[in-house]
Image (cartoon, rainbow, N blue to C red):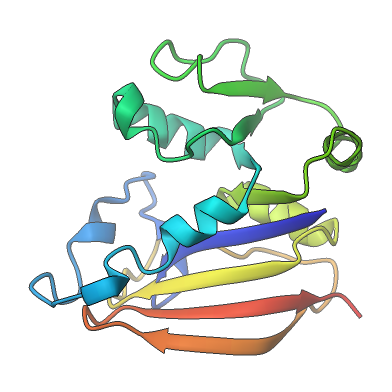
Amino acid sequence: MRCSVYIATSVDGFIARTDGSVDWLHTYGNQEADMGDDADMGFNNFLESIDCMIMGRGSMEAISGFNLSPEQWPYRDARVIVLSKTLTELPDNIKDHVEMYSGDVPELIKTLEREGYQHAYVDGGKTIQSFLNLKLITDMSLTQIPVILGEGIPLFGKTKQDIRLKKALAKAFPNELVQVHYEVSYA
């Protein structure tokens, strides 16, 4: 199964402030730039390519905090699975969109494959780190927001081995954000 990351970071590699806030994501860069056909920087095409999403509890809580209407739900009809060993109940405003899973991640991937799923969107810092250490991430699209936060929650943590990123494709957007797509190699 293909497991992809599509995430934004500060230039210094943080995905959130130390308190979990992501208020900076939409405040830096050239907000007045004419993005033309790149208004979503490829996110909608990416979403069309996935058939399921696996996220961590923190990501789920952030999405719940946005209080999205059913029409605003960004993940379309993709099956959304929240990983948590401690969560017992989902927030009311998203419980119709997501399901919880607390078991073994490699077993989850095997189950999804048996059920016919082919492409998972993996989101959330700890979840991404876990998938990397399990050698499950196949590719990553990292969008750098032009800000240095100085501290926060890092995208990458300790890894069990070096992880090689290859076949880099980079694109600079008119709004001053830069996106790099990599294939992941564990060799």
